Length: 279
Image (tube, rainbow, N blue to C red; front, side):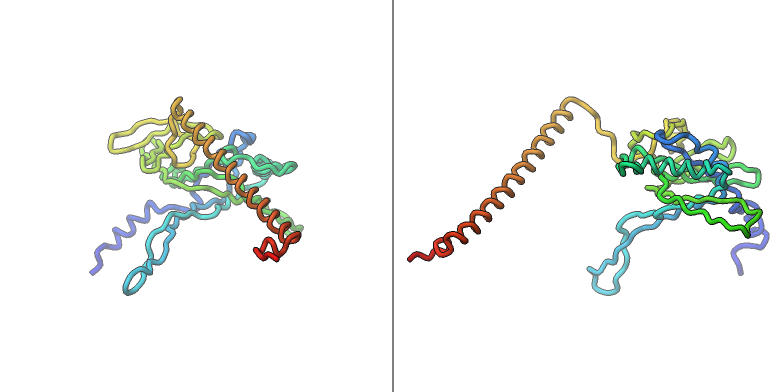
């Protein structure tokens, strides 16, 4: 006999998520003109990226081998589709963003912190209320895809798409009553030192209650180092030692080159003497 009834199953379908009920927000870095709100409104399609546990085979066993966890990986990029305006301002927004990453004239590459930003995707219910979401961290436009034109398509709206690279994503929980964003402390970004986007106040729920923090521009998960005089002196001394060690390696390499050069010159001038043969 089944463990559930048909009525119970039908009751669960009342809150079924719909693929066309979503909201996406792209935040532009400070180096790019803030056109992100207009682009976010015109987004036509987006995806929740997946997450994968990278594994390796444990062969140091007697008997069948098995997989063990090695690390965490995400999708290489996500594709975002959007409706195009007549002046293609949505496409130029991402093109300008790419130009801030790699200068099209000098081909100089900007620092990572200067061009990454974030993106949020929310699931909506039938009343357009947010029910859950994710925050995609350290995004930047990797690919601005081509646009195909055709005279046979007389009434179709032009759509553009971009491929966004990212570092990671974390879940966003939405309070069903107030709509406030709640993020588990396990996903807190330790280093809130990235510059690039605004830092709104968000609520974080934990076993100690709800507290408010300033949301940082999401960075690497390394704790910030306290800047003090002893630390500066220690770092300067370590840097000096590294420079001297590199200099010694260069001098040793030069001495080896000179030694080989002298050896071969000696062999050419005194072939038997250098080989230890005396007449």
